[in-house]
Image (cartoon, rainbow, N blue to C red; front, side):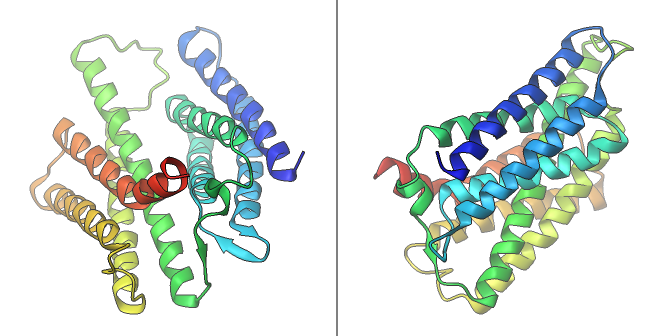
Length: 269
């Protein structure tokens, strides 16, 4: 058994345990064990990021494969969610991110390490490329988090309108969720803008046949995020429509980042 496989097993158990603890706090009337949830989540996330590092560097080569990038992005999102939950635990957010990571670990365990899912995406390293990738990954993580807060906003809003939200609810206040949604979206937009600019300035592949669709989808997502951010700042846009638009933009950005890799590394192999 390799280090990556052992790590994935540990991650699966840890993230599953975290999800179960969160589910228990949500659906039962017992007190939430915040320390246990955070401890298990932090340890599992640390292992996940170490595995991502191992998957990124195989045989002294950088592999921007679907497996390595999925682990890296999931780990960074988990880390951000856990850090934000230290001040105020957000079980709903944690159960989504840890549940996804548990499923991701299980799927990767079922995939041979020799498959293109791990070994694909071999890339020559350069300063411009590293900066572009770092900005892109940072932007994607933050914008996905913004979309998760948008979904949570819609959920809480619908509960309030239906008058089914109990006083003992585990959910954070609606105005705080909305503020986090738009703050994260604005920050993610800045990073995405920087990622696109560095790509156009320093990389020759942005408009090549192989990457043109990624660039086009990224620009569409960027345009939606820009319109939403300006609309919120200038015209006070908020509510369910803004939440849905944020999720749609995040889905488009996901297609830009992972669509072709999914086809190449899974469907065609």
